[in-house]
Image (cartoon, rainbow, N blue to C red; front, side):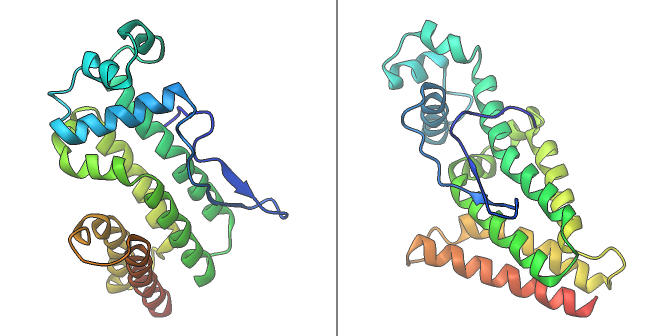
Length: 210
């Protein structure tokens, strides 16, 4: 996915040139980003199909003309949000492919992916609750390809089947944990760390079995 937004998911670069996890997004100052945030809020509140550009403009307190300057349709808004999410995932996949296939690399991939999921939680919630829309706009297919590429980094293709299932389950655990733990009492960050710990344990066991 190609589009990006100014000021969103800026990647932090270390002295050796490696890209670390995306920085937390500071979204309030940019009109395009505000449109995306408000649109996602409305999609979550009343559903994607029932949300109009007029309602998005009203929530933003701007004219429809001002909204059209950035996006012509609500589909454009949603796809742009997903495109922006794709950039840090793509950066992570490229980074992972350049690293040695060690356990440390796989664990670091999971840690960075956990940070990406944290920053994109509203979008993942939308994808979970609006699967028909996601399929219709081909977002689901695009995301599936990203997950396949990510999975190829953390699992060994010639590993025993059980080990490969553990790696696939690790990614599923990270996605499912964002939603299934919402009703569990506790600090959000602590729950994220717990999900990451489980996913890391699965990949660690798979690596030892390979």
